[in-house]
Amino acid sequence: MHYDIFNGDADGIFALHQYRLKNPLPDKQLITGVKRDIRLLSQVEHLQKSNLTVFDISLDSNRSSLEQLLRQQNTVAYFDHHFSGTVPESPFLQTLIDPSPDTCTSLIVNATLDGKYCLWAICGAFGDNLHHLATKHAKEQGLTEHQTAQLQELGELFNYNGYGEMVEDLHYHPRELYKAVAPYTSPFVFLEHSTELAALRMGYSEDVSQVMELKETKTPGKNRVYTLPDAAWARRVTGVFSNTRARERTDAAHAVITENNDKTLRISVRAPLDDRRDADTLCKLFPTGGGRAAAAGINSLPTNQLEKFLEKFLFFYR
Image (cartoon, rainbow, N blue to C red; front, side, top):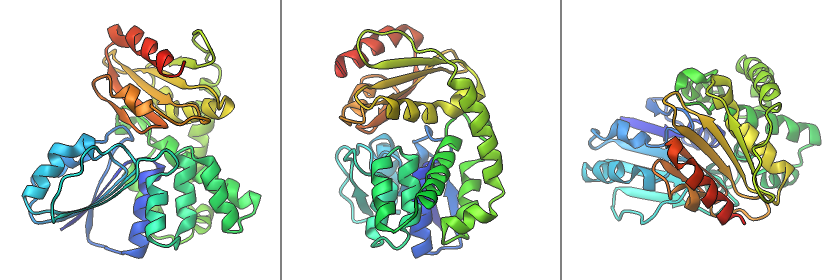
């Protein structure tokens, strides 16, 4: 049996899609979830002598599960751009991991395929807020401004759909969005025929209109902090809102704080786009924190640690 394991955001979906267009495999199991559900390998720890392909989830966050899978002689191919730590040595493991802030898993897969399905990689890069790289690749592909805007919308809508505390917060399970694009070689053909995008556009518009009314939490200096309520719409729009604010002020770091159902806090951090560093280092100071240098988060921060987080946030980006 083969298992494709992927992050439920745009980057994870489009990385997998490119790979499977080149390496079709009809008989496979799909393992995914909300964007922040990154310990996906724990769902398959029991497997023995199976084949796994992993996209866009931190090796470091899945280390114990990965090591167990390797001991059980599962073959694993791992594509990612998050912090990995020390990569286990095993004849059963093949990795292509680049944690630099100017890439994403879709672009990593694109490079391995010699750009064969670059249009999907552009969607993934737009979804991961790498607009400068996505636009660069779009120009190299000879796309018009309108076509580039179409791929940007597709990437941002798929990324928007991945945010939530639970799958019930989402408009579509990420597995269903992957299945929706799987038959299509061209994103432009998918855009013509998709029935999912209308619902995503409507949800996106409604959620963004609400979140843009929220006021900034006053802090000293140029960096910006926003607090969102405990509501499904707020959890869905966290990533879009964080990325939008980051593009408004490229010299500032941004923290978006959302209340969880259990009264803990979920935090999204965006490093300044002019200086993409340390978001992962900051978030890993706290339990359930992780991510990458340019964008990271904390899944469940106790409210009594919020002051400490804000102090560290302002210190890192002083």
